[in-house]
Length: 318
Image (cartoon, rainbow, N blue to C red):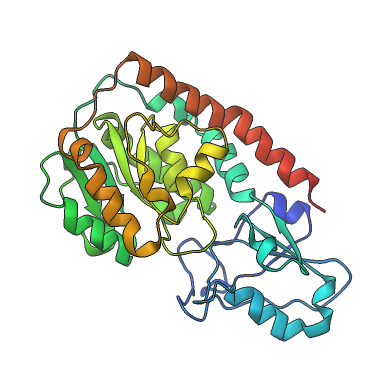
């Protein structure tokens, strides 16, 4: 959760709908409750009131969005004047009578920041080993399951930052000062830079995304960083996460990984992923010329056609 300093929300005169716990804003200062959702900003209603839902939303057991339900209760019949902008693809299908627009500003701003910091030159294939990489930040139940399964594997560099545990060599990690970053996009880029040696010394990633049980997929920098760092990946994420990437033109390396877990329900997806891909988790993969070429194509697609597509998507919404 963050307060944007610049970018497309100001350009569109949008109100940031999700409150920071810190009134001054700031990175990582959030007030999200896993059941009751975010505290909300509720601007005075007006024709074409624009509210940007700038982070991952909260869903109830019946797949209703808690934040949207709270706005419905607050605005009542005046909800017809409100336009909601979200990076949860498909939210408008759950609420077809509301003015909800897919607005993937995060991808656009993050990739702008990546280009500003000349990230591409930092990653290569020169130091590759057979080890894989699994980075975990905040505590999540799906991350704990993964860490419990991989923590004793010799073929892995892993971390669980919020618990201050892992096996990452000090010389492969350069601590960056995230809190001095101007915005969340820059902080995420600093994160990637600080881990560049980890990516360069490993052959693929086991990504534990921010959320695991949302009815709508929610892609973050954790997935994009693998593409930028030239890593094939397995994804512990919401259902159809891999399909979402494939549908957007990315190579998900189906010839290396068994992604059949992607379509399963929440109770079975992690187990299926880990069991069906145990061989690559144990043995690693060889980054041959064919894979190198495909990884470079993936990165070019992310920074080229995909970035342009996101820009056009943002531009066309009201």
